[in-house]
Image: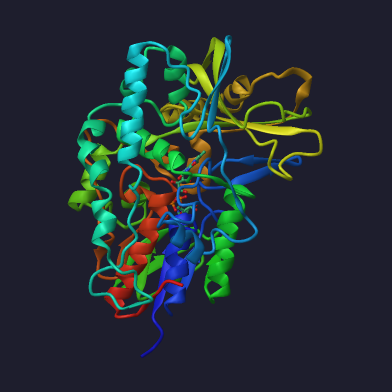
Length: 477
Ligand SMILES: Cc1cc2nc3c(=O)[nH]c(=O)nc-3n(C[C@H](O)[C@H](O)[C@H](O)COP(=O)(O)OP(=O)(O)OC[C@H]3O[C@@H](n4cnc5c(N)ncnc54)[C@H](O)[C@@H]3O)c2cc1C
């Protein structure tokens, strides 16, 4: 039989995950990427000798005992060249009273009254419930797999406590959950973990990953990790074409085809790993009208941010690694008011700044896409960006800012978002992996709330579905 072929649209983390597995399973795979390099929204970039980390803040599955770790190893994301640093404390509150750290095991939190003691007890209880909770990495039923992963009922039984408290956590926001603490400093500190308006399940799950010793930062950050994956794919014989956006995907006879600026490419299967929310409206001759696509159009709330990076001519090694700073005066940006900001300090990362200098970054969350879009249209975009960049007097060597329009421009994400909000009371949804015979979707947008774990997991499960449909043995490692 002739060798099977695949085209993957997008070299983000999900596209690269699918690509490595398909290529290793003997399917000749071509990845088309519109940007100049791999990683999608999980990326970092250099400005005047300073590196700005614009992606990974924590990597779930960095700890080797977590099942997801297997995907990071198999796809070459984690190698000897990017050992993981596990920060502790995970955040430090900085306010006019001084500082208060949030350690992985929660020790040292300033709880005094009975209410705070109860709230801390409840938080610890939920973290215990989530101790064994993780995204299971299994094999598709009926798929021929080299080195299959044996199914263990025990793995699922151990997750039961988390499942039992899930409805309670899904029914409230992270902010409401933190309000059980009376101490406003603890509330402010906990608000650094996830966006306070998303559900408390996401909060406990995320804090839980830190609590069990997972969620670290790989050396070299997003860019090295994505480059490692791209190199692994190429070393298996795969091909990536950068700066080659797919313009349209269409069916010709029985075969799916992809049109780029220069040619029409055909393959046995096409996998769309570009943002599915954008793709359903723009990548096909007509917008897709199937049920899940309609649901995505009406139900999806995007997570947007403005990214600020500052390179300073000062050694900030005395500053904490990650801070929740309570501002003396609220900051007004793009129609939003920020009373606190989370700041990451990369002084411990080798090579991120010239000798004696440092890099700090900050994400300002909020739906600002409309604000920036209007500014672009009336010509005030550049001036408005300049207003935001903080004046840190003489110490500033370089500043950089990305708005939702930047993410839209480079990665074609919907409303320039980088993840999907999962608000309280909203049930989890999954877009199907297979749209029709020969056409598949993968990536963070296929379920709430996105992130690297979902990108990797969906990439692997799409690769398994493709292998099963083509009657090919799935080779993981
Ligand atoms: C500032 C920031 C911080 C983050 N922090 C974390 C974190 O700490 N932990 C975590 O787990 N997650 C984090 N995330 C989220 C995480 O990075 C994403 O969820 C994940 O990388 C999404 O991967 P993806 O492959 O599904 O999508 P994408 O990264 O969007 O990949 C899609 C790819 O398709 C390409 N593409 C789009 N259209 C076309 C086209 N027509 N033709 C060709 N190519 C196309 C895009 O350029 C892109 O490369 C963060 C993201 C950002 C931006």
